[in-house]
Image (cartoon, rainbow, N blue to C red):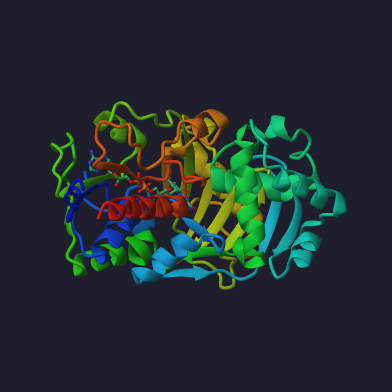
Length: 410
Ligand SMILES: Cc1cc2nc3c(=O)[nH]c(=O)nc-3n(C[C@H](O)[C@H](O)[C@H](O)COP(=O)(O)OP(=O)(O)OC[C@H]3O[C@@H](n4cnc5c(N)ncnc54)[C@H](O)[C@@H]3O)c2cc1C
């Protein structure tokens, strides 16, 4: 009988974003010796907080929202002792007649039950049938606008589908990969009304997630090396596996024979620090028709988030901040906010996520490929083929899958 190859006892994880942290957690809990290399001075990757001298606050690069239908992400938060808070089942929504424009309608989204949700959005049986057609079509493919022409112009498309696809897939809904949209909707449908509930990081991403995750890993004996890029793959070692939890371009530099998504989509966040805010402001408000997709209120900061924001990236920060402030004042008219703009920080993330069009989806690689010249290397990252959009949920799933692939070698 051939001798069983030696089992690895050590793992080098490159990249301390969510995927790398999730992989390291499973591997360390399984008793392996884990080293975690990160090129930045801190962990977190695209999910991070920073001290902003202009507003005087610790801000997140972007307000990160988890959904109730993100079981892996919420479980990761729980395992590391982090704190995301579920928002109420009712939140306001406002439609504007253009960027910085006037209100055309206000309504409340009620997530109590499917019937409540449909009523609060003014949806009818025709909308449900159109949705079921997409959900049940196992062979749907191509861009959503071509695969299901007409769906996005229905009430359902405008009120639910477009905001959801923009937020979760970070792409203009008509260009989104229809198969990925259908898969996401099936998950949401299976999760029930609580699946739509929003969860926000308490005290910001660092306090709520990254610092607790790093502390938990350190307690498990993981060595985290910040400001230490992995520039070259070390030679194969039968005692050690490697998890590359890097952005696609960095992973491709180390493993040139893999395919990686080449295009990305931007997200714009603008954070305002007014002197004072009246009590009772909503924590989340959905906006359609304007520049902002969402207005968030947290810890004295008002923030707007715009997904699929590629067209805004070349606009001057001052102009974006002025439009955003005009929208906040209009949408939160009851707060009586002053016309003068408070201290503000504009965060443009040009490569916020991979672009979830059919071309990008086709290039997402799996974690393990036995034809690769380096079978000791496993891939992770929200851009790998998880079947999920590039989100915290996708990053955690990818990290856990990479860890499982390593543990199967034991
Ligand atoms: C503005 C913004 C808003 C977002 N909003 C949401 C949201 O509301 N909800 C949600 O679920 N998701 C959201 N996301 C997406 C979410 O942040 C990502 O899906 C997730 O953080 C990706 O984690 P990752 O580990 O896959 O990748 P990354 O975070 O990119 O991690 C890769 C890590 O590798 C490091 N690295 C790079 N090169 C090297 C090297 N050579 N050696 C060592 N380390 C290296 C990087 O510094 C980085 O830390 C948002 C993203 C952005 C940018």
